[in-house]
Image (cartoon, rainbow, N blue to C red; front, side):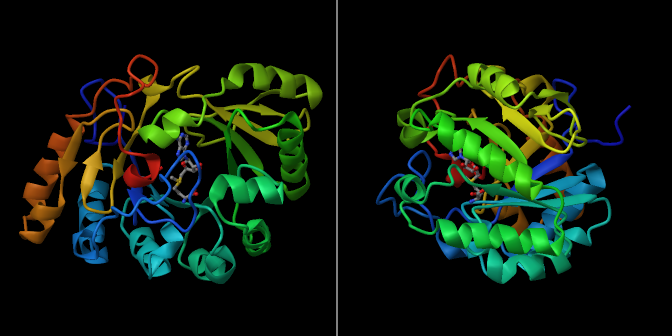
Length: 327
Ligand code: SAM
């Protein structure tokens, strides 16, 4: 039985919100924000912290339990530690995590930790400095690695590294990343590219299944389980000291167990990464809707959640790129 009113039309309990606090980012990953893109959301349209907190309180009252801060790059939004503390204090919210590219983490890790951010996911596609600069458009790998070290020293746990697999990713790059994560005690997750926006479609999809089999043999991995894991399927070393997850929205989709929705910085809730189903909350919040009206709106939104994405069948369907929706 589910302890939540947030049940979608397919019987899935929606207890998880990805909260995009900005659509801006200080990197330009080839598969995400298009080069030269300038059409970012204007600041007056950003949900203010009070508005975000209010909506999340209403959602928590209905059964929301987990929140992940994302973007864009969440650490470019000013005051993110303050927002974290406010979300962490909402009754019912049991888990607050953050997805970041870690370029600004050294300066902010301590405040985020103190604010109650429980877990960190860091996006890192390669440990090769030149390739990093090619993929992201900025030569700042050392900064990212320093950010990871400061997070590790503070005791964030677990730290997960998210690595998007591209056609150009070499076996060597992947093996280096596995070694790095084993040494640091990080969980590694490999992610299949999704055809989001032209950038996502043009980057070249790589099926993770053959890669999984190669890694299994190369590092002697066995099936594993990581508690609280979302859509990733895991392998681990026999002593359990290292885990690697495979997030395979295309080669083996996991829509039947989808438990999440996304709130963009302008107050639009997206019910599925791979569909246009959405609900606009900003005007309701600005027009001082009552808590009851907000509750009704949240339930209406959840009732719009579609069954599954169609990334394989209709790859050209989604024109917004990941950073717009909140990855
Ligand atoms: N800036 C933060 C970060 O780097 O983690 C949060 C937002 S970022 C959009 C979230 C994740 O989405 C990153 O791991 C990024 O690599 C991934 N991503 C972006 N576009 C993608 C695509 N088309 N397919 C799969 N993953 C994508």
